[in-house]
Length: 116
Image (cartoon, rainbow, N blue to C red; front, side, top):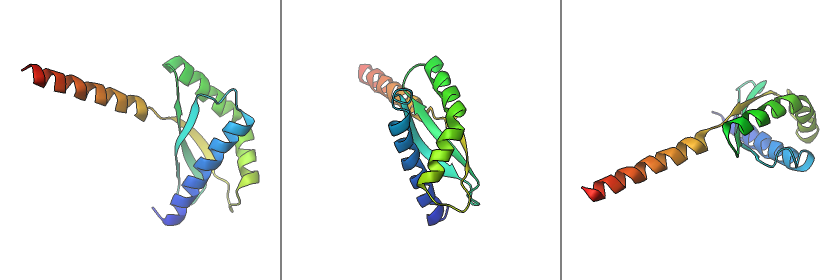
């Protein structure tokens, strides 16, 4: 991945987080943009989003994000200057939950090995 692509990824991630915090404070309080992956031609971007709460809450917030995507993209266009503003595809990021589960499993293994 080129350094420009990395910089654009970070810029979009930072600006999206700021947009959610400023314009959608109440709705987006449990939403965190964890990563952005933009295609090399800068036309498409996958926005990975983590949501605090259960699966039902996560699905509700993802539907809300997709519904607001046009307004969010327009605000993003006002903040950053690119030849092509990428189309944003929001994806639920469950890596934090998976990481927590792995840590729990490792702790159980350690407890079992101490018993033996």
